[in-house]
Amino acid sequence: MRYIVYSLVAMLMSVSTLSAQLTLEEYCQQVVDYSRMLHRAEDAVEASEADMRLAHKDYLPSLTMDRDFTLNFRDRGDERQWGWSMRADIRQPIYTGGAVRAAAKQSELKYEMAIDNMRSSILEVQYAAEYAYWTLSRAEIYRRAIADYVTIIGSLRDVVSRRFDEGYTSKSDLLQVESRMSDAEYQSSAAEQEYLVALHNFNLLRGADAMVEVVLARTLTDSEPMPERESVANIVARHPDYLSSVRDEEYARWGVRAASSRYMPSIYAGVFGLWQPKSPNIKGAGTMLDGGIMLTTSVPIFHFGARRQAMRSARSVWSSAQWATSEMYDSITLDESNGWTNIVTTYSRMESTRRNLQLAAENLEISTYSYHEGMTTILDVLQAQISWLQIYTNAITAQFDYAVAVAAYRLVTAAMY
Image 1 (cartoon, rainbow, N blue to C red):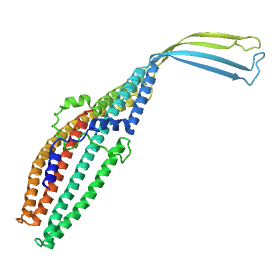
Image 2 (image 1 turned 30 degrees about the vertical axis):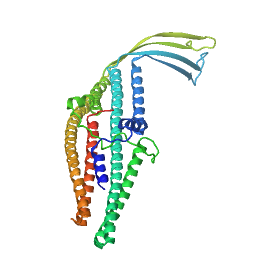
Image 3 (image 1 turned 180 degrees about the horizontal axis):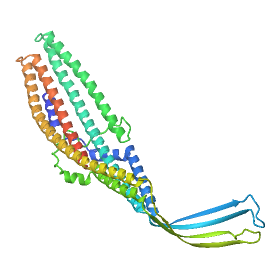
Image 4 (image 1 turned 90 degrees about the horizontal axis):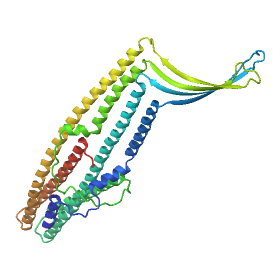
């Protein structure tokens, strides 16, 4: 039993020696490649790029062709009752009050925001992958711990049974050990269920069969140093949510220009070609080709104060976007502070539980030895076992909390693999 206890402690406190089959980085990449959410984000980026290219087409001239056919109800001497015409126009915008440029800039910003949203989705998917990875590691370690705990109780039951048969212990001691054995088997069943659930989630996130067994290259038993703290200035310089908020603010600023352009003069230039029957349209008169150049100017004069209200609405949207950017900065600052505090506190708890685990293992060994020598009661041994299992569970939980805290800090600071 001494070998079992100290091997568990060594497993929890030393670097894992499992053969590397799936690293955390590889698993995160598999989840990213499979993620349905990221596929939707990629489609959104593609749609935004198409919209951006479409908006830039408004800088270019356009060619349109019109065909008309008319029929008069009254005769006009020798003139035909029907007529037709075909006209082709090439039209180039010269000045639109900034509408074309504003639409083009807004489409560019929409495209960049779509990329930011995709990067934000990647961060969320990576965090979900890390959480699933460490959850499976915790479930696996706890399952092994409970299995070995059942072995420890079984060894003690063998000793108590033998001493009961020899008349050195009471029936009460044997019943207490049997009760503890029953509880240990129950916990073993629950630990097995927890492991299978974690395995299912782990595999489904990467698109694999739910029951595929996997060996993790890294586990909670690995020694992980504390990460370096990031400054808020460095975080916001790369954080996709903040960058998207800044671009949304710029989008709203161009929205003010777009709202104003609807009430500004516009100038278009172009050429046209016309093919139609000669006028009047008399049988045998034939057709004619004509053409020319044109310059079209439109000047809004009065719209009952519509321009003032449109500008007021657009400026309010811009102001709201500015406040949203400031709010995003404060939110990132708060999340970074809380995330770093969580890392520090969980690291301290992890180190504390490691030391306590050594003491609990030593206490369990001494209590078991003393019971064999008749120097203590079975209650002392059972209490030592409960204490050891509780501290061991706390150690696993503390290491899991620390690993998740590091993953959450990576999410807050927008650190990608």
